[in-house]
Length: 331
Ligand code: TRP
Image (cartoon, rainbow, N blue to C red; front, side, top):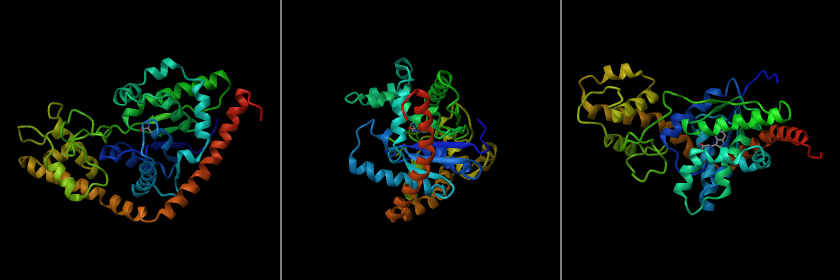
């Protein structure tokens, strides 16, 4: 299959408030593809219902996630931005792919194991087949590259295996996608417990910085961030707190770790934490302003959703027709 222009797909669930980990590890990198690739970014509401959602909240977060995409620099004219449930082929291909995915494969997914432990009262079939819906998202668009956080690597590998299996059973149908995992900033750790990943569901309010936090909150959280008993700003494995702050500072300022060590040589943690807080708050200021502006204009967001769903549907419909033909469904 010759294609001149490559395709990028990624998705974010409209559940929970997004953290600077989501921002630096995934969303901030999405816009770098806009110029040279055909890009699809979806608000994956169908994935969100694998855990119980309050309907009004889900609806609100769907708007918010779209607004956040745009506030983080995704221009709706250069990217197809859409809501997953607006394009019915996702559910349709998801079902088909269920029949080409093994029970054993799904049982080995660590996210399924984690989420089943966390939601023991609601281990539904959708939670189990979550990765086949994700594979459908990706494969529908002939995706070459999938920018995701490191935690999605296993799901991506499964999507590749499913594509290869389908292609071998029939003939070349799906592009086998590659992950794009941004390694420098892929893992932002908790500010309170820097050996654990920063997680949007953390119950400690000082552990997590959200994209939409106010400047005061951001400064306060960094001020309280856990470091260690010595006082040198130095990147190393036995200094997880300081190293995490250096990673965040580097991501927001573009400075190298060496430069940062030199900048804070002999200055102590107080100065350093303040600088990290300010760099983070400044870096997020435009995102926050743009988000507020977009959220005040629902009609505009709805227009973006509608346009996005139409262009996504055109591509998805073609792929779905091809799949139906190959597996022997009557046209
Ligand atoms: N599972 C992803 C996450 O939780 C979200 C997602 C759904 C996704 N479908 C996708 C990411 C397709 C990339 C491609 O982060």
